[in-house]
Length: 355
View (cartoon, rainbow, N blue to C red):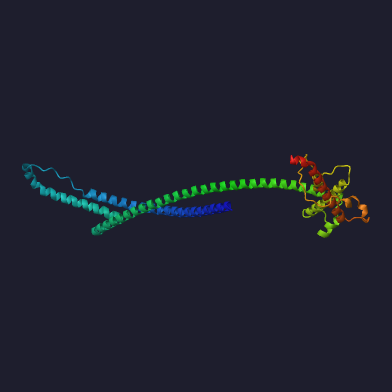
């Protein structure tokens, strides 16, 4: 039961890990697709912005070159500067004219490039382009920041996926360990069951032999089968459930035969009577080695010759005895002989007890 609970818990944890891994993988794929789309869009926007910036930069360079003033000459000493003041106005006039011509040429080039002839419109357009460039630059910075954030999320998801994979591997190891343990337990149970089956076969064999021996003994000693037929309702033979009844009848029949044997032995007057031997014979046992007899003085019975009835059966009416009568007579004779033997033994050993 504990193993089943453990296996169920491991399976639930594995299922949850699988679901979390699938969700993380799905989210990671979505973020990758979004990041790829954003990168493609960002690259297109960057390309367009780069083109506009290059165009504006070239225009600024062109205008800067055209509007660049000549470097001023070093300050002359007062003696020489005075002489040059007269020609300064003329040179300034010429310089203004040259600069005007330069501006005119630059305007012509700008007008040819843009197709706009109004200078104020060109200036406003230039300002608008600069504002748009700044806005695009800010947007690019925002996109770069967003890309960095998405990349950080992707890295975090990848780390989480790596953790799920590690957890999944640990769960697989745990499942393998539990499976191996269950296989070992199953193998042990199978081996134990095989041993029990062998024992059952051996016991069944012994039981069959016991049934056969019981049936043979039942027949040989002449047990009354009709008693079992009346008890069981039919003569179905010895089975696992009826063997005890057969053994009970065999025991009764054996007791009867032992009683008869004891009686017949007691009738042999040439042999000394031993009550212990008679008792052992009645019990169906063997006398193993000699034991010191215990002599106890019994109470007086008043008549020591009560066995005349047993020794001289001819005084009664000569007729066949029933089984009950035969058993009763045998038991009475045995009891009387035991009493006589005990009295004789006590009288023979009384001097030793007194000493």
